[in-house]
Length: 159
Image (cartoon, rainbow, N blue to C red; front, side, top):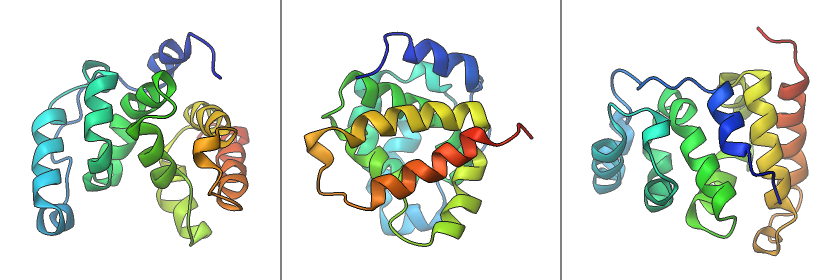
């Protein structure tokens, strides 16, 4: 599906220092308190490089608890986990986090814009591989639309 140096390419494009501050928001603490507490305990103060694919896969269901800043920071851990196991939980939850199910302009402005063109190219590469998987055939228009947004960001001039 993808080349063997994907994690190394992630490491070259994503910051490796831990994210300072809060990684889950008030809504997550209120609506999904157990998941917010779990992912905060496992990820707070860590670089994405310190998060193993197995840990990312275990926490994949809690990805929605991350703030947008924390999602952008810790996303490579989930990308690496999905690359290692395209049928695992990380791949499934990544698709839901990175493929818009509505509101294209808002998704592009609030999520896609968080990433550099080089980072977006790595996200696009993984999603393109997942789109071919039988596990994700229930997505119809969503994958082509999401891939187009990530491809568009990847082609943008670095800001």
